[in-house]
Amino acid sequence: MFTTLPLELFVCREVIEQYFFSHETFSMQRHVFFTTVILFSSMIVSLVTCNLGVMLEITGGVSATALAYIFPAACFLKLSSVRDIRTTLPAYACVTFGALVMILSLALALGKAWSPAGEAKICM
Image (tube, rainbow, N blue to C red; front, side, top):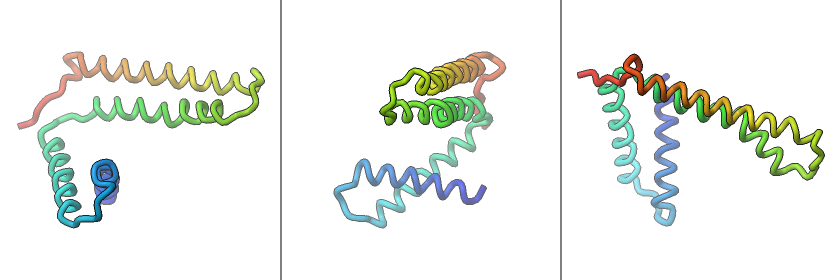
């Protein structure tokens, strides 16, 4: 658990650096500022929120199905030069199944978030 936050800080900070400051040289002051802001904002969210389960369900359901089912099959379809239906049918079935699972998991997570039982609470 102690190694997770520094790795996530690195990724977030690197995306900010590459997107907004790619043309500038490295600045330790900017590095420390973004690290501090990201760290304290994540700490505030974790201290204020009682249950992050719905948010984790949404991100997990969308990203896991996309990474496991949709992206590999879509890459195969895009990179494959063979257009035989017997070869591409399993890839189309995998993309379709992944899209259905993604929609179903997203609908279930959002349904839980909008119901009184899954209502987000602020702990203070």
